[in-house]
Structures are given as C-alpha cells and as structure tokens.
Image (cartoon, rainbow, N blue to C red):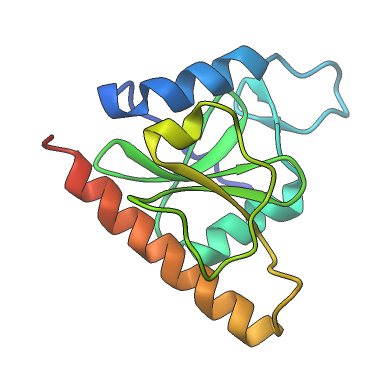
Length: 147
C-alpha cells in the first residue's frame, strides 16, 4: 500500500453527491491495527488503493472520508470502494466494462460502478479498457470544473 498520504478532496459543488455518500459511511479507525487513510478508516481494500494509483498513471491520489480518489482541479473523477469497485464519473455508462454493484443515487450524478480487475477479460485487455476509462473520467472531471 502507498505510504504517502493523499490530498484531501476539495469541497467543490460537483463533489456534493459523492461526498454525502462517503460521509455517511466514514468513521475513525477502530484500533491501532485498523487500516487508515489519514484520520479515517480505510473504506477500500489496500490492494484496490494501489490499483487506483496504477490506473491513474501518476495522477495524485486524493481522499475523502477514508476513500481514495482521483480528481482534476478539485473535481472527483474516480473513487475506489469496497474490495473491487471503481466509481467512474462519466457522461454515460462505460459499455465495454464489467459493471460492479451500483451506488443508488450516484448514477444520477454521473457515477458508474465497474469491476476494478475486469476478470471476464484478459489482463491486457481489461487493463487497457480500465486505463482508457480512467483517463476519460479525468478528462470529464476537468470539463466539469467550470460548469
């Protein structure tokens, strides 16, 4: 797991729905052996946090309420939750990716849940599709900044 602490996600109006969802599940670590992300209990598997960093290709990690994220100019683009779910902010559902368990209400805000490893595809094809989707989400987040 990465040792450097991510930046705190900005309280941008475009992040309101995601932050409300994350705030509702956020809590302090329950003990010294509990995984933490800053002052919050880590709400994803440490391997998924590493996976998010790999798919971000050097984009700085952000965090909110124990969840690692990728963002552009303060607007969240990708979040890693649970053991294998990525939430991608895109204008439409990514048709070429295996979906994961959706988060009720976030899809109205443009968040789409996908499996972080795409086990139905070869590793190379799954990684390629995920890298492309993460890049598209980061570009889309940048476009939302001024709206």
